[in-house]
Length: 92
Image (cartoon, rainbow, N blue to C red; front, side):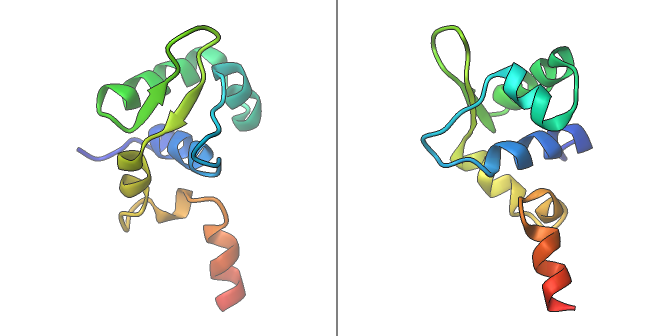
């Protein structure tokens, strides 16, 4: 199932974290300049398909799963990886 642009952006933001790190909805919303409601909806939709996971207790912290990292490596989503565009400009 293809990812929406919002889902790809969210995975890209989470993929820049170390595997042990996670962010709250509020932190993600601030980083991406989006509303907490829209961020919550997107990370929850990604969790349903196994691309993100949430901590067990509030405040909930979200992280990308191994499956989510793999999904971002697909050709259509690489541009959402942190630093991908900078690498392309260095090659040119």
